[in-house]
Amino acid sequence: QVQLVESGGGLVQAGGSLRLSCAPSVSIFSINVMGWYRRAPGKERESVATITSDGRIKYADSVKGRFTISRDSAKNTVNLQMNSLKPEDTAVYYCNAEKGLGPDFGSWGQGTQVTVSS
Image (tube, rainbow, N blue to C red; front, side):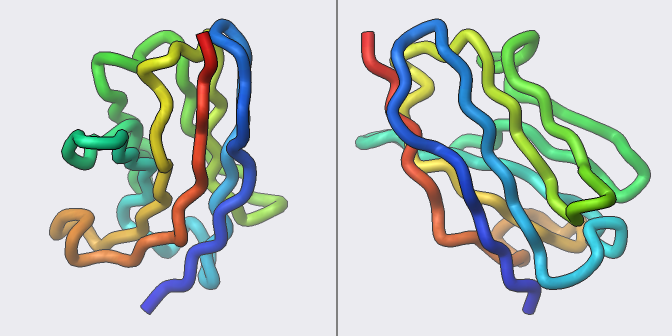
């Protein structure tokens, strides 16, 4: 089981930026799919952005053009740069590492709260 340690998050005003980082216990390039998911109060979990080991990236339509997922090989982290944040981005954000069978079959981080005030 891959261990994931998340950092970043916090409180920011609308239009601001935050950066989330996820550090796995193994090389990021050995993980088939890494991604960021979020769950807002009263809503279902949503996929925000994913990146595969060969660099393919997917974003939720709601964050395209505002969020960027990337890998930092020097720090062995997967990062989520979030710009132009909106109140509707408020949620607990979770990092996930999986083998390509779906996030529920992978490992999850502890979650980090992102709150965007209007």
